[in-house]
Length: 329
Length: 209
Image (cartoon, rainbow over all chains, first blue to last red):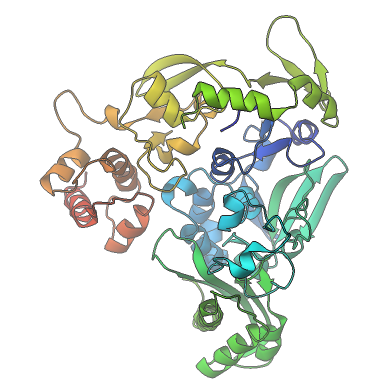
C-alpha cells in the first residue's frame, strides 16, 4: 500500500472540504473493507484518506411513519440486527445477512456497500473500469467474461454492479442522500448508479468531494418483498445473479411491482418488462415464469456467460414466488 | 511485499509525484497552515483538523488488556502492527484481502479482519488476539474443543478460526447447523477441517460455553 496522509473530520462540512475536487487525490474511508484491498492492489492510490467514522451525524437508524432512515456509517451487521428492519423490511434484513461474512459485516458500512467498486477482475487487476489493450480493443469481449454483464453491455462497460443490497433497497424505493460543497441532494437510489462511458468517469453519480450521508426507505408494510441470490458457494460468495422484488397487491392480483436484478448489468437493473408482465396478474408458477422470461428478453450474453441468462431468470422467478408466499421471513 | 519494504518506499517517493504542499494547494477548500512545530493541521470548514502522516505517527493501543506504543505510518494495518511491532503472531497474514479469516481478532468484542483495519483507527479500541485466550497453562474452552474434535490439521487457519468461533458462540450460544455454516463463513481452511470445527462448536454449545 502506498503512503497517504490521514484525517478524521468530525463534521460533514469538514469532511467535504478535506476531499479533493478530482478523483485520485483523496478517498473517503469508512469501513475500509473494499478500499484497503483496492489500495493494496494499487488500483487506487489516494494521497489522503478522509476517515469519516468520527462524524456522529452519519450514524444511527430510526424508524417512524415516514419510514426508515439509516445513517451511512451504519454497519451491515447492526442494520441486519435492527428490530425495525427485521420486522418491516425482511427482504432487506436477509440481503444484509447474505451480503458478507460476520467479520466484514462488523466493519462494512451501508454507505460503503452502496459505493463499493466493481468486482470485475480486469478492474481489480489494474486494467481500468473499461479495459482496453494498446490498440483500443476491448479486452472483455474476447477475454474471460464469465462473470460479466448480460444486460446493458453494448457500451464499453461490461462489469456488473457489485452491491447485493442496492437491488433490494431499490425494490423498496429507497433514496440516497449526499452532501458536497454545493450542499445536499437526494436521489432515488437507482439514479445513483450510472454506466460510465469513459475511463475518467465512475459508476456512481457521486462527485469526488461528496459523501453519502444517509439512505431513506419509505414504509413498506403494505409490500410483499423478497430477495433471492444465486451463488456458487452457499455462504459468503459473490453472487452470479440477484433478484429483488416488491409487490403491492390488490386482493390476489398485482397492483404494482418492482423487479430489480443485480449482477446482470453495470447498474442495478430495473426490469420494466417484468413489471408490465405482472400487472393485474396473480402470482403463480406460470406468471412468475413469464415475468422472468420478460425480464431477460433483451439479455445479450458475452462469449462465456450465457449461463447467467438462465440463472437470472431463475432468480427473478424464485424471488417472485417467495414474495407471493409471504416474503423473506 | 511487506509494507515497510524499503524498495517500496522508494517507489512511492518516485511515483507519487505530488508533494504534500502541492496537494494541499490543489485540494479545493483546505488551506495549509505550515507550522514550525507541533502537529500538522489543515483548516476545514473553518476548523482545525489534525493531519497524520504520511510519515510515522506516534500511536497507542490496548491489546489483550495491555498498553502498547509504536510509531507507525497511517498505512500500516492492525495485522502488521500486531505481528511486526508487538510480536503477537497468532493472527496470520494469508490473503491480506478480507477473505480468508486467518487474521481474525476481536475489536471491542467483535470479530474483525485485522488485515483490513488500519492500526491508526484501532487506537482507543479494545483489541484481543488469540494470545489472550489461554489462562496460564489452561486452554480456552474453544481451543480445548478444537483439540478434542481434531479440528485442526496444518493449523495455519486455526488461530483465526478459534477467535471467530469464540465471537460466534458469544453471540449465538445455541446455534443451529445453519447458524454455524453462516456464522463461520468468514474463515477458510484449505485442509478442510470444517467437520471437526462443526463438532467443536456443537460440543461447546451443549456445554453452554
